[in-house]
Length: 387
Ligand code: MLT
Image (tube, rainbow, N blue to C red; front, side):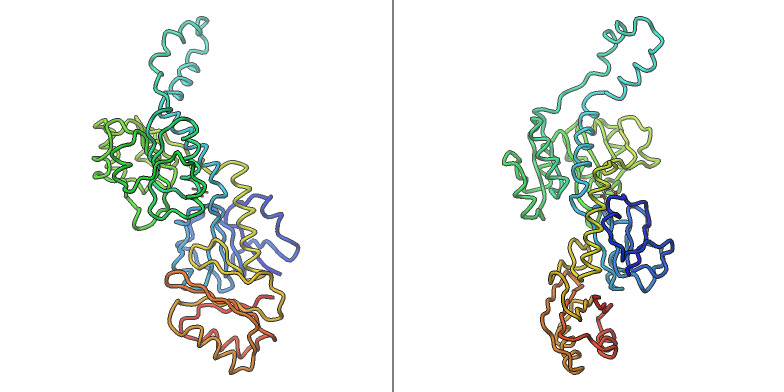
């Protein structure tokens, strides 16, 4: 029986994928797995039993992933599962920034009691007119699942699309339309584009990346879109850039007191991935990752441990070990098992930065003593028997 806890409401379509041996608990205590969306986990005390967290979404800035890596808690996310939802809102954001659609709709609502509303509309519409996006240069910073979908959609709407991503994955590169220009520097995006959209994760290295210096390099009257995370943009510098006319419109999915209700800024309440489809896709993917980890020890799409798989667990004694990525770890693990007289049938070891993961299929179940000896090795954070 596996016990899991949902820190936020998770789509039933995902939870329905959990078979009978999974039990949703109402307290975090004793849970082995957590499903989470945006609940902040940084100050949360977590029980010893917790070995996996699945974030139904892409960003993991609400989760202390390094602390959890130290504790041997594997954190998963669902890259791409909500990309279409976010892509659609980014395209909508570009259209809303190009014509005063919101102002026009509000104006019509205010005239609702006027008999000659049709004539008034023809006379007044000029103030809400704008430009088309076709033919304009769009710069995309970050070509992951969302950025590359935005690139292809914008290109098919006739935009001239430039993409910058020094860490682009092979899959994302294959998925990009041949019409997308490959920008080798961020500067090329900042200095050349009429519309700029950010699609990078929030990291120490990306926090505040759109700062006064970046604004100074942009074209006058640029439109900036941020559907990634608010603090990627230095909002004090943004306000100055709006006031000087450097930035024509800022479209953001992150409400806060600085941007809300301000002239020149369109704010949506973190709606990018809030579609029925995205919520379902994220929940289904998160549950699939959790199940493969809990039932087989396999890791796919973790943000703090490497991908690692030995397929379905069919042996009596598969063990999964989270540990530091340090020399002679494998030698110590196999030595302990050898000394306890346990034969290894198969094993695999993968690392990601400071952390590593080892899966071992044993020919017989490991004894309590062997498991304790493995757990007490320096650098080992958790030893789990896959049942
Ligand atoms: C994400 O990180 O996946 C999106 O911002 C949506 C969300 O936070 O749920």
